[in-house]
Length: 301
Image (tube, rainbow, N blue to C red; front, side, top):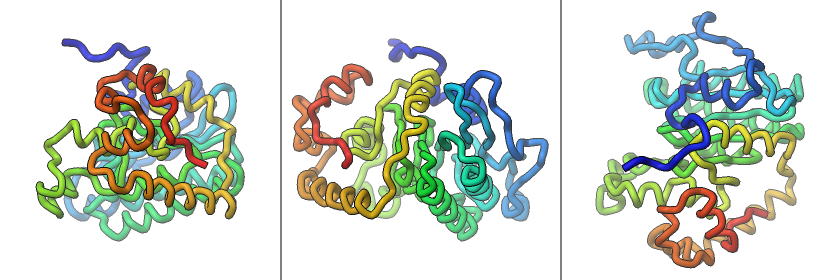
């Protein structure tokens, strides 16, 4: 049995560097602080742990649809894409560069389990600095887009970073949240959540659920061209970051909690959102899924 056909190479299976190069216009990517700079984590070395010469994140400049952008891409295959001091500093530095250069957008290709436990407080501080930098860039009118489609998904503090962005693009294979299923099972027990129930895990954290809840903007197939085209369409489209916009979003969240807060499963939430036959949604490919949920109440204010 073969999987679904893709219109191009898999986003999920690509390396961080390949993802970013494929999203940007061909030949336009210029890496900053690449492996030859040997900027590595001092904490990992002190613990006699392996290091990566780019510390698990690729950052640089390029063009998307002919417009200048800055981009960062996390490498999930190095420590699960986890954020440490140097990793976070590269992300923060790129965002601060955006304030000076004013590109058409900043692209964050997120593939991470969250903070690097080996770096503890340094990683937590790094993530908080990334959040602040994202909001500063947005306040300057420069859109920040999160692309989530890697094997690790987007969890922990970086899940909050994604939701601080102007837009979030996800594949149905992607997952996004704060605490992941394994963490919840380990801390609360299997009675609270069975992390081995993969269907339930993807219903709860997967791209389809996040789009239906209004936490992601588009559901994409797992292909590099699909992510590139969706990102190209959102370049230059900033979401207002004003008091009125924040108050509207808080009111929307309150309504969502009232409507869906009693749901025991994602299927219940989808049904309450107005989706007919929600049981069939997990098996639908993105185009058919989008048509099936067209009337659902999922649009953010």
